[in-house]
Image (tube, rainbow, N blue to C red):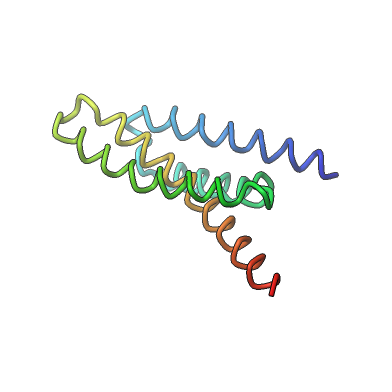
Length: 117
């Protein structure tokens, strides 16, 4: 059962990242409710199934780095107008995908810290 959950978690991450990139590149899907909902749902699955206890800290560091750097890059390329609008949309979609997984991982870390005392 644990092996199946690992496979679902790993595939969920790959699929979520691909969906975020592909639908982010398509201007007509940017910010639509169904895309945001899909990315949030897949992010929850990733957070629940894909992040082991030993991976929580590196995952959270990577999430924080991404969630700080992505908006800065999006703002920097916004000055180029529509030329890099696709990149901004992809970064936003990746952020929407990563946030629920980061929240779940951080709650797991908090619970682990609280129970260790």
